[in-house]
Length: 248
Image 1 (cartoon, rainbow, N blue to C red):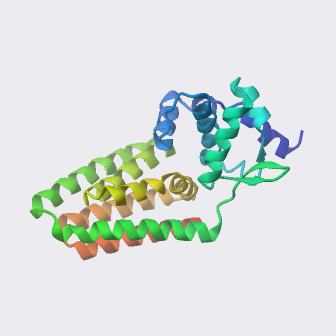
Image 2: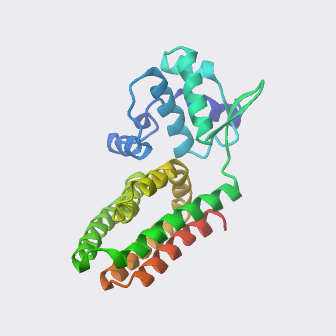
Image 3: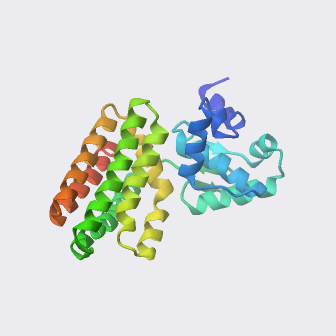
């Protein structure tokens, strides 16, 4: 059996994240990261396919088939078809007539636009610091970020990339939530899956985890000074460092 066939067959071996060679704790982290949790057959197929796409680069450019997934999950092909359509709408799969659904390889332009969108939202959040209700709010945010940063350190020491990126997301979401703007939060959440995929790519680069820890440490330290311009600059530097890791 060739390498491509082995990769394709692994779709049949990894129904749940804990069956991908992960601990139960890591599996729960993955489910949390994907923000899934539906209980219909379509939801199960959606989570199964999405887990494989997000957490492994092996499937990029590969075709998946309704029949294989339906057989593995012991469901009909209709909910699998529904799940595939959902993932195609999220730009994780491409539907190709007479061939099926192909796992999309992240396009460099899409990657650049994604991180630009994230930068716009986080820069705006940083700029709102001057409008916050005094230093108490800033200090409270800094304490929250420090707590997430400590979780990142623990995950890094354990070499737990899923836990690390979960804490990384909480770190950045805390900054967005300070704005109290539900529309911008929804827009940020809309970037979640693609950003998760890119984040996992970046963190596989040697030394990137340590760099993220240092960048986040700088962000918290600058925040405590109350200087919104320096805080904004630190955030932008951090996001652009991620872009350089993904698109060297």
